[in-house]
Image (cartoon, rainbow, N blue to C red; front, side):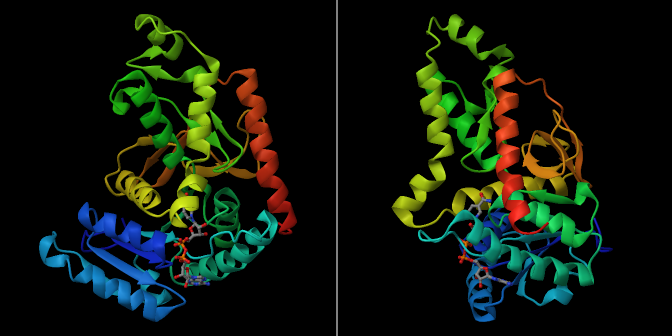
Amino acid sequence: MIRKDGGVKVTVVGAGFVGTAFAYSLLIRSLVSKVVLIDADRERAEGEAMDLRDGLPFLEPVAVSVGDYEDCADSDIVVVTAGSTRKSTQSRVDWARENFAVMCEVVSKVTEYNKKCILLIATSPLDVMTYVALKVSGFSKMKVIGSGTVLDTARLRFLLGEYLGVDSRNVHSYIIGEHGDNEVPLWSLANVAGARLKEYLRLLSMPFEESVFDNLFVGVRDAGSEIIRRKGRTNWGIGLTLTRIVESIVRDENSVLTVSCYLENYHGIGDVCLSVPAIVNRDGVKRIIDLPLSPKEEEALQKSADAVKEIIKSLGL
Ligand code: NAD
Protein backbone atom coordinates (compact mmCIF):
# COMPACT_ATOMS: atom_id res chain seq x y z
CA MET A 1 0.00 0.00 0.00
CA ILE A 2 1.14 3.57 -0.68
CA ARG A 3 0.54 5.40 2.59
CA LYS A 4 3.39 5.75 5.07
CA ASP A 5 1.04 5.65 8.08
CA GLY A 6 0.11 2.07 7.21
CA GLY A 7 -3.54 2.96 6.70
CA VAL A 8 -5.40 2.37 3.50
CA LYS A 9 -7.00 5.20 1.55
CA VAL A 10 -9.69 4.68 -1.03
CA THR A 11 -10.98 7.46 -3.26
CA VAL A 12 -14.35 7.02 -4.91
CA VAL A 13 -14.97 9.08 -8.05
CA GLY A 14 -18.72 9.23 -8.51
CA ALA A 15 -20.79 9.69 -5.38
CA GLY A 16 -24.02 8.46 -6.94
CA PHE A 17 -26.05 5.39 -6.01
CA VAL A 18 -23.25 2.92 -6.78
CA GLY A 19 -20.42 4.99 -5.28
CA THR A 20 -22.24 5.59 -2.01
CA ALA A 21 -23.50 1.99 -1.67
CA PHE A 22 -19.86 0.97 -2.04
CA ALA A 23 -18.63 3.61 0.44
CA TYR A 24 -21.25 2.51 2.97
CA SER A 25 -20.35 -1.18 2.77
CA LEU A 26 -16.65 -0.30 2.90
CA LEU A 27 -17.20 1.62 6.14
CA ILE A 28 -19.12 -1.11 7.89
CA ARG A 29 -16.49 -3.73 6.92
CA SER A 30 -13.72 -1.62 8.60
CA LEU A 31 -11.30 -2.31 5.75
CA VAL A 32 -9.75 1.13 5.27
CA SER A 33 -8.73 4.22 7.23
CA LYS A 34 -9.71 6.97 4.75
CA VAL A 35 -12.50 7.32 2.23
CA VAL A 36 -12.68 10.35 -0.07
CA LEU A 37 -15.64 11.09 -2.32
CA ILE A 38 -15.15 13.08 -5.53
CA ASP A 39 -18.01 14.03 -7.81
CA ALA A 40 -18.67 16.58 -10.54
CA ASP A 41 -21.69 17.47 -8.40
CA ARG A 42 -19.76 18.51 -5.28
CA GLU A 43 -22.89 19.28 -3.27
CA ARG A 44 -24.16 15.75 -3.81
CA ALA A 45 -20.82 14.36 -2.61
CA GLU A 46 -20.87 16.69 0.40
CA GLY A 47 -24.37 15.60 1.35
CA GLU A 48 -23.41 11.91 1.06
CA ALA A 49 -20.21 12.39 3.10
CA MET A 50 -22.14 14.25 5.82
CA ASP A 51 -24.72 11.47 5.93
CA LEU A 52 -22.07 8.74 6.12
CA ARG A 53 -20.12 10.62 8.81
CA ASP A 54 -23.22 10.69 11.03
CA GLY A 55 -22.82 6.93 11.55
CA LEU A 56 -19.10 6.98 12.34
CA PRO A 57 -19.52 6.83 16.14
CA PHE A 58 -20.94 3.34 15.63
CA LEU A 59 -17.98 2.15 13.55
CA GLU A 60 -14.27 1.60 13.84
CA PRO A 61 -12.39 4.86 13.15
CA VAL A 62 -12.33 5.94 9.52
CA ALA A 63 -12.07 9.42 8.01
CA VAL A 64 -14.71 10.27 5.42
CA SER A 65 -14.32 13.44 3.36
CA VAL A 66 -15.13 15.14 0.09
CA GLY A 67 -12.16 15.93 -2.08
CA ASP A 68 -10.65 17.03 -5.34
CA TYR A 69 -8.37 15.10 -7.65
CA GLU A 70 -5.29 16.18 -5.63
CA ASP A 71 -6.63 13.85 -2.93
CA CYS A 72 -5.93 10.90 -5.22
CA ALA A 73 -2.18 11.48 -4.71
CA ASP A 74 -1.82 9.09 -1.78
CA SER A 75 -4.81 6.85 -2.47
CA ASP A 76 -4.09 3.14 -2.66
CA ILE A 77 -7.19 2.38 -4.67
CA VAL A 78 -9.28 4.73 -6.80
CA VAL A 79 -12.73 3.35 -7.55
CA VAL A 80 -14.52 4.89 -10.52
CA THR A 81 -18.30 4.80 -10.47
CA ALA A 82 -18.82 8.15 -12.26
CA GLY A 83 -21.00 8.09 -15.32
CA SER A 84 -24.56 7.57 -16.36
CA THR A 85 -26.83 4.56 -16.34
CA ARG A 86 -28.30 3.62 -19.72
CA LYS A 87 -31.43 5.52 -20.67
CA SER A 88 -34.24 3.46 -22.20
CA THR A 89 -34.01 5.47 -25.43
CA GLN A 90 -30.23 5.18 -25.71
CA SER A 91 -28.33 2.66 -27.87
CA ARG A 92 -25.47 0.76 -26.22
CA VAL A 93 -22.99 2.61 -28.43
CA ASP A 94 -24.36 6.07 -27.56
CA TRP A 95 -24.26 5.16 -23.89
CA ALA A 96 -20.68 3.92 -24.24
CA ARG A 97 -19.75 7.21 -25.97
CA GLU A 98 -21.24 9.24 -23.12
CA ASN A 99 -19.35 7.32 -20.44
CA PHE A 100 -16.20 7.16 -22.58
CA ALA A 101 -15.95 10.95 -22.23
CA VAL A 102 -16.47 10.69 -18.45
CA MET A 103 -13.89 7.90 -18.09
CA CYS A 104 -11.26 9.79 -20.15
CA GLU A 105 -11.74 12.89 -18.01
CA VAL A 106 -11.72 11.04 -14.67
CA VAL A 107 -8.74 8.77 -15.40
CA SER A 108 -6.65 11.65 -16.85
CA LYS A 109 -7.27 13.69 -13.71
CA VAL A 110 -6.60 10.80 -11.31
CA THR A 111 -3.33 9.85 -13.03
CA GLU A 112 -2.15 13.46 -13.03
CA TYR A 113 -1.72 12.99 -9.26
CA ASN A 114 -1.24 9.25 -8.82
CA LYS A 115 0.48 6.74 -11.06
CA LYS A 116 0.75 3.98 -8.49
CA CYS A 117 -2.78 3.28 -7.37
CA ILE A 118 -5.01 0.43 -8.40
CA LEU A 119 -7.90 1.61 -10.57
CA LEU A 120 -11.11 -0.29 -9.90
CA ILE A 121 -13.82 0.43 -12.45
CA ALA A 122 -17.58 0.02 -12.00
CA THR A 123 -18.88 2.41 -14.67
CA SER A 124 -20.64 0.60 -17.49
CA PRO A 125 -20.50 -0.73 -20.11
CA LEU A 126 -18.04 -2.30 -17.74
CA ASP A 127 -15.56 -4.16 -19.93
CA VAL A 128 -15.35 -1.29 -22.40
CA MET A 129 -14.79 1.25 -19.59
CA THR A 130 -12.10 -0.97 -18.00
CA TYR A 131 -10.32 -1.05 -21.37
CA VAL A 132 -10.63 2.74 -21.69
CA ALA A 133 -9.22 3.23 -18.17
CA LEU A 134 -6.28 0.96 -19.00
CA LYS A 135 -5.47 2.80 -22.24
CA VAL A 136 -5.92 6.32 -20.84
CA SER A 137 -3.95 5.61 -17.64
CA GLY A 138 -1.05 3.83 -19.33
CA PHE A 139 -0.93 1.69 -16.16
CA SER A 140 0.28 -1.89 -16.18
CA LYS A 141 -2.50 -4.37 -16.91
CA MET A 142 -2.28 -5.69 -13.33
CA LYS A 143 -3.41 -2.36 -11.91
CA VAL A 144 -6.64 -1.81 -13.84
CA ILE A 145 -9.52 -3.98 -12.73
CA GLY A 146 -13.20 -3.96 -13.60
CA SER A 147 -15.82 -5.27 -11.19
CA GLY A 148 -16.69 -7.62 -14.05
CA THR A 149 -18.74 -10.71 -13.36
CA VAL A 150 -17.86 -11.02 -9.67
CA LEU A 151 -21.48 -10.11 -8.92
CA ASP A 152 -22.86 -12.44 -11.61
CA THR A 153 -20.70 -15.30 -10.31
CA ALA A 154 -22.04 -14.65 -6.81
CA ARG A 155 -25.61 -14.73 -8.16
CA LEU A 156 -24.93 -18.02 -9.98
CA ARG A 157 -23.45 -19.64 -6.87
CA PHE A 158 -26.38 -18.45 -4.79
CA LEU A 159 -29.05 -19.77 -7.19
CA LEU A 160 -27.21 -23.04 -7.73
CA GLY A 161 -26.79 -23.51 -3.98
CA GLU A 162 -30.49 -22.81 -3.48
CA TYR A 163 -31.49 -25.33 -6.17
CA LEU A 164 -29.19 -28.01 -4.80
CA GLY A 165 -29.96 -27.25 -1.15
CA VAL A 166 -26.32 -26.61 -0.27
CA ASP A 167 -24.51 -23.56 1.14
CA SER A 168 -23.44 -21.42 -1.83
CA ARG A 169 -19.94 -21.20 -0.30
CA ASN A 170 -19.55 -24.88 -1.18
CA VAL A 171 -20.68 -24.32 -4.77
CA HIS A 172 -17.98 -23.40 -7.27
CA SER A 173 -18.88 -22.10 -10.66
CA TYR A 174 -18.00 -19.04 -12.70
CA ILE A 175 -19.59 -16.58 -15.03
CA ILE A 176 -16.96 -15.25 -17.42
CA GLY A 177 -16.79 -12.97 -20.46
CA GLU A 178 -18.69 -9.73 -20.88
CA HIS A 179 -20.56 -8.37 -17.87
CA GLY A 180 -23.93 -8.24 -19.59
CA ASP A 181 -25.98 -9.99 -22.24
CA ASN A 182 -23.09 -12.07 -23.61
CA GLU A 183 -21.77 -13.44 -20.34
CA VAL A 184 -20.89 -17.13 -20.22
CA PRO A 185 -21.68 -19.69 -17.48
CA LEU A 186 -18.98 -22.33 -17.08
CA TRP A 187 -21.20 -25.36 -16.46
CA SER A 188 -18.44 -27.75 -17.52
CA LEU A 189 -16.44 -26.75 -14.42
CA ALA A 190 -19.27 -26.32 -11.90
CA ASN A 191 -18.73 -28.43 -8.81
CA VAL A 192 -20.04 -28.98 -5.31
CA ALA A 193 -17.53 -30.05 -2.66
CA GLY A 194 -15.17 -31.11 -5.42
CA ALA A 195 -17.77 -33.25 -7.26
CA ARG A 196 -18.64 -32.14 -10.80
CA LEU A 197 -22.23 -30.88 -11.08
CA LYS A 198 -23.50 -33.97 -12.94
CA GLU A 199 -21.80 -36.30 -10.43
CA TYR A 200 -23.28 -34.34 -7.53
CA LEU A 201 -26.76 -34.54 -9.05
CA ARG A 202 -26.31 -38.31 -9.38
CA LEU A 203 -25.41 -38.46 -5.67
CA LEU A 204 -28.69 -36.71 -4.91
CA SER A 205 -30.57 -38.93 -7.40
CA MET A 206 -31.58 -35.77 -9.24
CA PRO A 207 -31.74 -35.77 -13.06
CA PHE A 208 -29.59 -33.36 -15.09
CA GLU A 209 -32.19 -31.28 -16.88
CA GLU A 210 -30.56 -28.81 -19.21
CA SER A 211 -33.58 -26.51 -19.20
CA VAL A 212 -33.32 -26.10 -15.40
CA PHE A 213 -29.75 -24.86 -15.68
CA ASP A 214 -30.53 -22.73 -18.73
CA ASN A 215 -33.28 -21.01 -16.73
CA LEU A 216 -31.00 -20.61 -13.77
CA PHE A 217 -28.45 -18.85 -15.98
CA VAL A 218 -31.13 -16.59 -17.48
CA GLY A 219 -32.02 -15.63 -13.90
CA VAL A 220 -28.40 -14.65 -13.32
CA ARG A 221 -27.91 -12.84 -16.64
CA ASP A 222 -31.15 -10.87 -16.42
CA ALA A 223 -31.01 -10.16 -12.68
CA GLY A 224 -29.71 -6.61 -13.24
CA SER A 225 -32.50 -5.67 -15.66
CA GLU A 226 -35.12 -7.30 -13.43
CA ILE A 227 -33.92 -5.18 -10.48
CA ILE A 228 -33.82 -2.03 -12.64
CA ARG A 229 -37.39 -2.75 -13.86
CA ARG A 230 -38.53 -2.78 -10.24
CA LYS A 231 -36.46 -0.06 -8.53
CA GLY A 232 -34.84 1.88 -11.37
CA ARG A 233 -31.23 0.98 -10.63
CA THR A 234 -28.88 -1.50 -8.99
CA ASN A 235 -26.57 -0.38 -6.22
CA TRP A 236 -26.39 -2.60 -3.11
CA GLY A 237 -25.13 -5.75 -4.83
CA ILE A 238 -22.49 -3.86 -6.83
CA GLY A 239 -21.50 -1.90 -3.70
CA LEU A 240 -20.82 -5.15 -1.84
CA THR A 241 -19.03 -6.58 -4.88
CA LEU A 242 -16.63 -3.63 -5.03
CA THR A 243 -16.01 -4.03 -1.30
CA ARG A 244 -15.20 -7.72 -1.79
CA ILE A 245 -12.64 -6.85 -4.49
CA VAL A 246 -11.12 -4.12 -2.29
CA GLU A 247 -10.96 -6.63 0.58
CA SER A 248 -8.94 -9.03 -1.55
CA ILE A 249 -6.53 -6.20 -2.49
CA VAL A 250 -6.17 -4.66 0.97
CA ARG A 251 -5.73 -8.00 2.75
CA ASP A 252 -3.44 -9.33 0.02
CA GLU A 253 -5.67 -12.40 -0.15
CA ASN A 254 -4.78 -13.95 -3.51
CA SER A 255 -8.51 -14.66 -3.89
CA VAL A 256 -9.86 -15.95 -7.16
CA LEU A 257 -12.39 -13.45 -8.47
CA THR A 258 -13.92 -13.08 -11.92
CA VAL A 259 -12.80 -9.49 -12.39
CA SER A 260 -12.59 -7.82 -15.77
CA CYS A 261 -8.96 -7.58 -16.84
CA TYR A 262 -6.85 -7.18 -19.92
CA LEU A 263 -6.46 -10.40 -21.90
CA GLU A 264 -3.51 -10.98 -24.19
CA ASN A 265 -4.15 -14.52 -25.36
CA TYR A 266 -6.91 -16.25 -23.45
CA HIS A 267 -8.11 -19.13 -25.59
CA GLY A 268 -6.95 -17.06 -28.56
CA ILE A 269 -8.66 -13.88 -27.36
CA GLY A 270 -6.58 -10.72 -26.92
CA ASP A 271 -6.57 -6.92 -26.74
CA VAL A 272 -9.81 -6.71 -24.81
CA CYS A 273 -10.92 -6.57 -21.17
CA LEU A 274 -13.22 -9.39 -20.08
CA SER A 275 -13.92 -11.28 -16.89
CA VAL A 276 -12.04 -14.50 -16.24
CA PRO A 277 -11.04 -16.08 -12.94
CA ALA A 278 -8.02 -14.15 -11.71
CA ILE A 279 -5.93 -14.09 -8.55
CA VAL A 280 -6.34 -10.68 -6.92
CA ASN A 281 -3.97 -9.33 -4.27
CA ARG A 282 -2.27 -6.09 -3.16
CA ASP A 283 -0.65 -5.70 -6.60
CA GLY A 284 -3.97 -6.03 -8.41
CA VAL A 285 -4.41 -8.91 -10.83
CA LYS A 286 -1.54 -11.23 -9.99
CA ARG A 287 -2.42 -14.02 -12.40
CA ILE A 288 -5.14 -14.97 -14.83
CA ILE A 289 -6.22 -18.60 -14.51
CA ASP A 290 -6.33 -20.32 -17.85
CA LEU A 291 -9.16 -22.78 -17.34
CA PRO A 292 -10.01 -25.62 -19.72
CA LEU A 293 -13.26 -24.69 -21.49
CA SER A 294 -15.69 -26.84 -23.45
CA PRO A 295 -15.96 -26.03 -27.20
CA LYS A 296 -19.41 -24.47 -26.55
CA GLU A 297 -17.97 -22.24 -23.80
CA GLU A 298 -15.02 -21.20 -26.00
CA GLU A 299 -17.41 -20.21 -28.75
CA ALA A 300 -19.58 -18.21 -26.33
CA LEU A 301 -16.49 -16.46 -24.90
CA GLN A 302 -15.40 -15.48 -28.42
CA LYS A 303 -18.88 -14.02 -29.04
CA SER A 304 -18.54 -12.06 -25.78
CA ALA A 305 -15.16 -10.70 -26.87
CA ASP A 306 -16.50 -9.74 -30.30
CA ALA A 307 -19.39 -7.80 -28.73
CA VAL A 308 -17.07 -5.82 -26.44
CA LYS A 309 -14.52 -5.22 -29.22
CA GLU A 310 -17.22 -3.86 -31.50
CA ILE A 311 -18.05 -1.12 -29.00
CA ILE A 312 -14.37 -0.39 -28.33
CA LYS A 313 -13.89 0.01 -32.11
CA SER A 314 -16.88 2.37 -32.34
CA LEU A 315 -15.10 4.61 -29.82
CA GLY A 316 -12.13 4.88 -32.19
CA LEU A 317 -9.76 2.99 -29.88
P1 NAD B 1 -25.68 7.99 -10.53
O1 NAD B 1 -26.23 8.86 -11.60
O2 NAD B 1 -26.43 7.82 -9.27
O3 NAD B 1 -24.21 8.51 -10.14
C1 NAD B 1 -23.24 8.84 -11.07
C2 NAD B 1 -22.43 9.98 -10.50
O4 NAD B 1 -21.35 10.26 -11.39
C3 NAD B 1 -23.22 11.29 -10.33
O5 NAD B 1 -23.18 11.72 -8.98
C4 NAD B 1 -22.53 12.25 -11.28
O6 NAD B 1 -22.51 13.59 -10.79
C5 NAD B 1 -21.13 11.66 -11.34
N1 NAD B 1 -20.38 12.07 -12.53
C6 NAD B 1 -20.80 12.08 -13.81
N2 NAD B 1 -19.84 12.53 -14.62
C7 NAD B 1 -18.77 12.81 -13.83
C8 NAD B 1 -17.47 13.30 -14.08
N3 NAD B 1 -17.08 13.60 -15.31
N4 NAD B 1 -16.65 13.46 -13.04
C9 NAD B 1 -17.03 13.17 -11.77
N5 NAD B 1 -18.27 12.70 -11.48
C10 NAD B 1 -19.11 12.53 -12.50
O7 NAD B 1 -25.39 6.57 -11.23
P2 NAD B 1 -25.12 5.18 -10.48
O8 NAD B 1 -26.40 4.48 -10.31
O9 NAD B 1 -24.26 5.45 -9.30
O10 NAD B 1 -24.29 4.41 -11.62
C11 NAD B 1 -22.96 4.80 -11.91
C12 NAD B 1 -22.38 3.91 -13.01
O11 NAD B 1 -22.25 2.57 -12.52
C13 NAD B 1 -23.23 3.81 -14.27
O12 NAD B 1 -22.42 3.81 -15.41
C14 NAD B 1 -23.93 2.48 -14.12
O13 NAD B 1 -24.36 1.94 -15.35
C15 NAD B 1 -22.81 1.68 -13.49
N6 NAD B 1 -23.20 0.43 -12.82
C16 NAD B 1 -22.36 -0.63 -12.95
C17 NAD B 1 -22.65 -1.83 -12.34
C18 NAD B 1 -21.70 -3.00 -12.50
O14 NAD B 1 -22.07 -4.14 -12.24
N7 NAD B 1 -20.47 -2.75 -12.88
C19 NAD B 1 -23.82 -1.95 -11.59
C20 NAD B 1 -24.65 -0.85 -11.43
C21 NAD B 1 -24.33 0.34 -12.08
